[in-house]
Length: 306
Image (tube, rainbow, N blue to C red; front, side):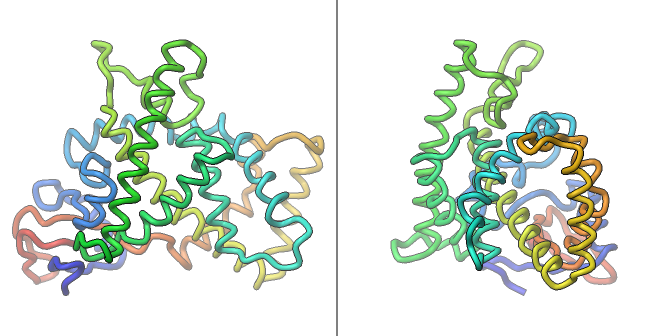
């Protein structure tokens, strides 16, 4: 089949996934369709293989691993409470998916970019939505195409992020910011043994962009489908509420959630995992065929996408 002008082999199932994600990089390597690469930047982790992938992945995990994320649970709780107060309380009807998209973007903006409610966040929300509309499209850069509008939005996002990098770098130098206050600040703080930076500004911007997109869509989709499960399964809803109320009893009314509270949400977590199993939020990922190989009797030519 052909997708976005490129010949593509679609593999599915457990065995195929295992093959794709464990295959040696001299057979399959990371390379996204041209539209994704142009919009997100060529230094994002979805484009890297080998040593470069390992280096960037290690830097990203310095913030994204559970041990680091523990300190941000309270901050996420504050964002969620604010969202519910603004968009849910007093309403007889709420559109779940648009609401979850707004919530997810606000949380991600706070944790990854480190910007709170205000004009800059509102501008970024609109730009990212415009950017995402053309990220999977024919890479035809003409004024009337979605791809062109997505590229324009991407350029504006990059300008804003580069300005934020300069502000956060200055705050670190003046010791007016914590090294772990958000994802960007964490990446700016990383140093090699010779005190050189681990990631360039371009690498930070590209990976922030791809994380904002990937984290937004997958999380908002999961939350939306989770709400659907709760709405259509009264017994599941009742059990989740019971578990949440038990945790609530152990806290004062204004206490924020902690990592320990999350570890007690065992049934809620199982419901979320079942939602992921029933409706995976990510449709696929892409690999580039570096050299010809056979899969279940079929020859896959070099240059194709898998």
